[in-house]
Image (cartoon, rainbow, N blue to C red; front, side):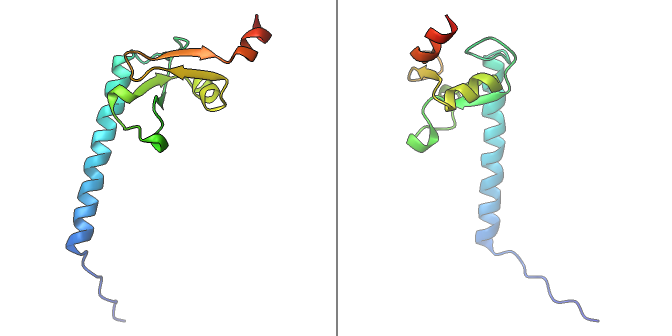
Length: 108
């Protein structure tokens, strides 16, 4: 029984694959640098944090850079995306968090 010949990858495919691997390496480097900068702690509550949050969402033009990412715990990251916790600031150095006013009254 003959095997069908395996197609060789095109040069364009190889270029795309190499570019993706480079982006993946850069993403891993940036994520590690952000966690190191933040001491592995949530920038909001100080608990151990494993999630990273984009200060300016990628959908709004935010980049995957150290200045646009902060470490958060899962609870705070979920609260941010549920609009219970607001994020203010243009970059990681000036970021601050504030609970939604309605939630602040309930917990006070």
